[in-house]
Length: 129
Image (cartoon, rainbow, N blue to C red; front, top):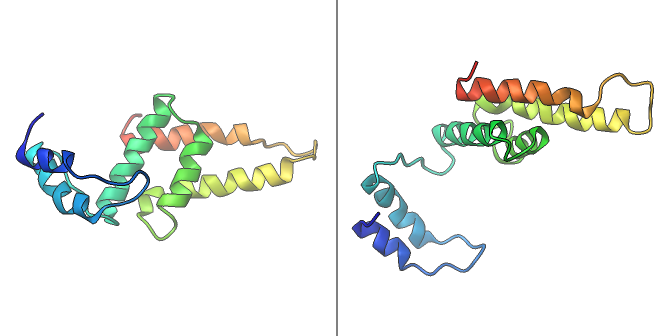
């Protein structure tokens, strides 16, 4: 792909691991030229799409169920879109089960028991029944 704004973005030098306001300045235009949707930082729509992308990664086997829930806990948070609430609750369940099960043979639930619930939630997020 070659568009005027992509050329500008390609010429921006950003130190590795650092954000750059100049990139943000041109990003929306570049995405529009590519017919891609731009989601403003912190928008609910952007969080929802990010949740769907991460759910697809789980279903493709690129990440594990705990990876998805911990990502949702860190990046969506309870204050974010309600669409992530179940994944955040499941992350809390992983933490609880790991703490209770650690060294106690009498507990009946293990972290792996939650994986099916996370996978079901990921399928719901991407509309896969």
